[in-house]
Image (cartoon, rainbow, N blue to C red; front, top):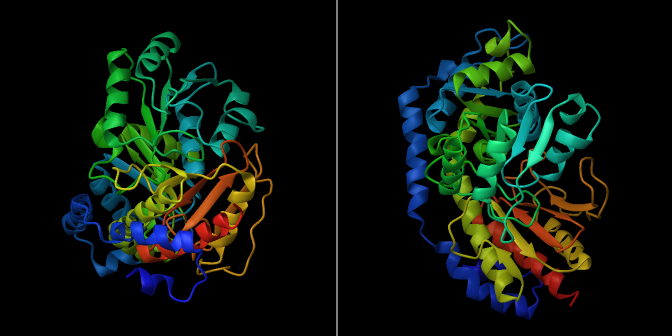
Length: 416
């Protein structure tokens, strides 16, 4: 298999040897993948979608059948009372900020349970013009432990002291040195909050984590799970959108904030994209499984080359993000240059570090997705800051992840 993947590409001999060691991971069987596939299939069978349900609407989108069936389908998958999934929610960050804004009032506390959230969300919460803090919301966070885990005793103390209105949990590592949270970790976190006497909504940023495990955050006791429709759930097909899933009263409150009082979730055309959303969800378990196989290969490849990786190859995963600690800014740039050459769109582009809104440090990114920003496709992001980690994301096929990471590794090794 490896020879077919690498073909005639110019590969550093050290990288080729490491790839041969990592290659068996491309064929590893994971029983969780079968469970996730069947969970999605059973949701489709229970929903009973008809061809006529895929017709969309324009304008206001009254009684849009594709929207209604898609949201009902997602509710079945997530085990949610209600789901709001819309084209007009353009990103996970958009959905999260709208939710937090709807659920907090001036003088109330928003408590981040796992340290600072990812850069752009942290900026939107506390630093940007018109941020939540600028309108009077009190922001607090519980620092992570030295190994990047959630500090549950400190969380319990913070909940008792601050009496927060909302407790925010980031499931994925984002672009930071921290552990991604598995569903069992979220269950322990929710139990800690409830044992501390708080009934505040626990809101989980579920981006990059959907369909990775055989359970989702609502089944661990979270009140809301929020994310993007163009990452895991989109299967590489959904064109845009974000979702909010969970308690019906909270989803209704957020819908009122996003749209208007008295209108709430009642409007929203799908503009003919209903089929892409529904089909994307059906394909999503397969695509996520391919990404996970590819990321296992990438972890083994770079570990064999002497770099620290998290999670290690073969470990249980919580998301579709692989951290690789390259240790120097020139290696981050080399990795991004190499990966870009393997992408299906813009392979001839040469990414360079630059300022990105919401990030403190300069960032270099590689991306060539068919849907702009859809990081279920193979991509990477790397803030140019210590400890100089690159965050490898997604991959529609494991073989593509393998080829991309081998080319990236060759560029990295040539800097040494």
